[in-house]
Amino acid sequence: MDTLGLGRLGISIDVSPSYLDDAHELESLGFTSVWLPGGQLDRLGRLADLVHATEKATIVPGIVPVDVYSPAQTGELFDGLSGTGRFVVGLGGPQSARPLAGLRKYLDELEVPADHLLLAALGPKKLEMARDRAAGAIALLVTPEWTAQARGALGGSTLVVDQFVVVESDPDRARAAARQPLSFLATVPGYRQNFLRMGFSQADVDQLSDRFIDSLVMWGSIGTIASRVAEHHEAGADHVVLAPLGASSIDAGRALSELVVSSK
Image (cartoon, rainbow, N blue to C red):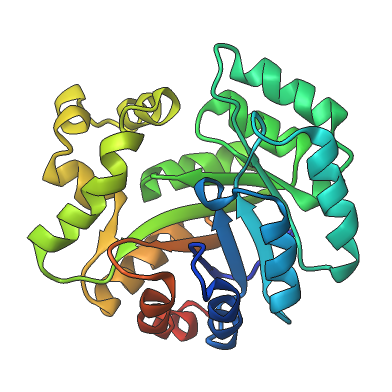
């Protein structure tokens, strides 16, 4: 259940000299949310800038890393934007020995209403926390089968799938673009553990096999990508965020805007 009013389809945007204008154009193309990846979040003020540069789209960080920004900083940002009705806090992390304990402590100190909060979650315990202490979960690098299982764990809470996508029909070029971020993400313990939990072998993950890439990254024609997005929706995702690889956010967004109509 989309308890946050995110709509069916959003898009992730990278910071560039024109990213505020790009965000305005992307919402005009029909994307109902614009997401700023945590790796692009060099200052929280960028989220406020995106809210003010747009008119209708909901702005979401995917994610605010809790080991970088304090609960007070995140709460202050939310307070300044809550009146717009177009800002949701996405939290993730921390990358520490006891991540659940660190996240619980952060939530205890955070003054943001749970119904305006999403948590990055892959494992069962994080999904429980997203269900019980937030409006729902954000998941990156998952299969539709995982989505169906997460829907069962979350009940009626919001489920967002953050999906890497390459608008490219040549297999070699598409997979090369996908392997760039995955060469790092496959070494991150939380992602790696979930890959194995989803049934990929150690060799699949270590070698970034074609099976591994093709299962986790959508690539091909717009029609092919639309079909794969539909699989996540049918499995229980409320909202799918398209995170373009191999092209600028705005160029990919223009091409992917055809999906907005088909997702309604």
